[in-house]
Image (cartoon, rainbow, N blue to C red; front, side, top):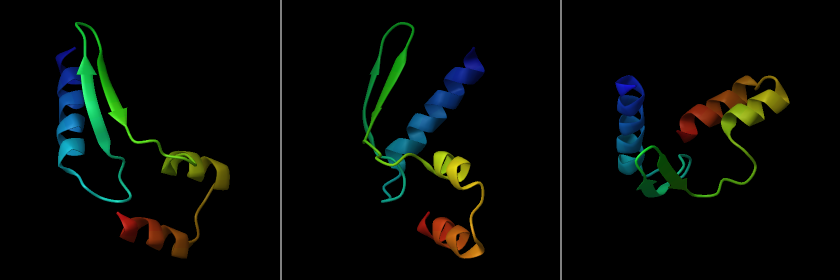
Length: 70
């Protein structure tokens, strides 16, 4: 619905503005009548969620490094 479109539009807007080494880079956007395709850089090694699922938890020092990197 329109809420989903608004959410996707907001995500695209944010990704277009952000230029940070630790945030995925948006390379291109393609759309059709029913779909929107976001092309991003390849992130080898997974994302923060996958890392947390593997480790189960972070130490205080690891958490500090992650937060400061953003």
